[in-house]
Image 1: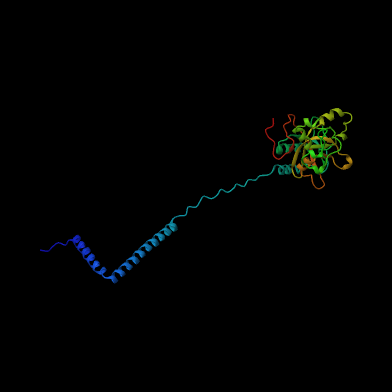
Image 2: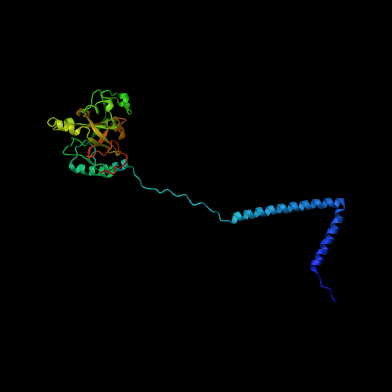
Length: 293
């Protein structure tokens, strides 16, 4: 009768015999040194192999993993924008005569409409039955005006190169004293305009009414070549006909429409501002004026 083979028992016997032979081998010094060195080498190779395999695995993962790219930056939307002054210049270019002119109603209407649509300011060549001898003409660079009795050039803050007029404007001081000088008075002188009221056909016969009506009357000055505009007030009368100019403007007003350098002269539009509630501020018009009553 055959004996059955017991695998577990055979493995235990082999391990016991292996340990016995290992002890006998290690009892010799030379054998022990060789065994120790070979074991260290084997362990080192195993560790390095593990590191290399791990590194290779990591690289493989990086190479095979889809790269998550960040979403693209939003591309700025290019909008067709146009500055207010450039738009006004384009709108006025086919409408404004290129020489000193008294506008006819047919000429004035589309110009008034273009300015209203672009700047939001109602302007008139003829307001309340009043009109100047020119609405298109050449403007000159004027001096500063005295705002109150003790005023001097060094008390003004811009364009001091213009100097200050030795006399008063046609309507005198802007206020009676420095103590009563307000921001509104400051702006009136800073942005004042000059027109040839003295050459109106009824200036002498209707002087008192016209003097009061024109005193600090709001005027829109527009450089039609650039579309730059500034709201001013009538601060003086002139210039004389022999100068070849029909209008004048303060140094700051000339600067606002880019006519303060070189010859300091240029062709402009000169129109009444229809502002019965005094809502239009004085100074350069850099954007359309809205929310008016």
